[in-house]
Length: 130
Length: 201
Image (cartoon, each protein chain N blue to C red):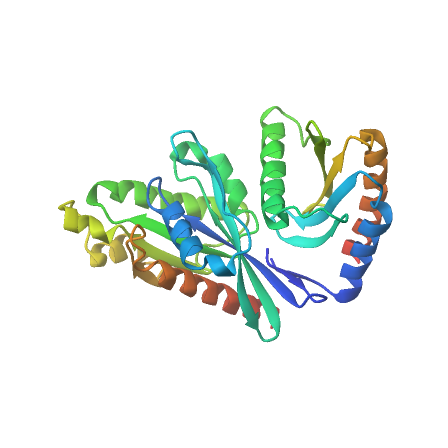
């Protein structure tokens, strides 16, 4: 299955990433698909992660954790979160085939981040569904 | 699941190297990475066991250049070949656009190669993909073993056993020295792009 997103779709998604997530402490946000393709990305100044590798590993990691969920009788694990000493990563599924990945430091509370991510996901889903 | 970004005029496709354990999938990727490293901006990701076997996948992105005004970005993956890692193999196949099947030419590895091809068919079917429709290239790897006196299967036998129904393009290779690696890679990328064009037409 190949899918195409035009300029308006992509710009809409980029705007959401920029509007919702430029909070200090959030360093990278990316929207990817479950094959590991990168749809849109936004990084704060001074951040330069290896985005293609992050996307490939995030898609695989999310897939692996969901396969584990099914083994123990869950449909999926709704929160997927990696906690580090300074940096953390939060993953949220967007519709069936997409994933929003957020890299942030300890200045941002997980609660606030989840709130922002939930709002962003709603808007991104509207664009992708259209 | 190829993704076409009309804003950036960019196409992203996923190509997976599949095949039995110790068949040379990682060696293929390592050779491509080494040969084309000036066109690859990042490091190769390799998730390995302590014994240096692929545990999940190897990965790097490759920028092929422009076709009809679109930048073609190819993501190359391997799968773990060992039978026990089927759950992870299945995960890597998600959204695949083209496959290289790396078979082992050694006589003693024939069964494992046949089983792996069967496993590829089954795993593709779980994503509603048909091996006969997906861009697929076969590689008969380890042709160099003959020089070390290790019995290998003649190409005709490999064609008969693996490719009589598939009728996919097949290349002889010795990934460890690089023979046939780039040819295989070029063929699978060309087939994947053509298939994408046909799909969009």
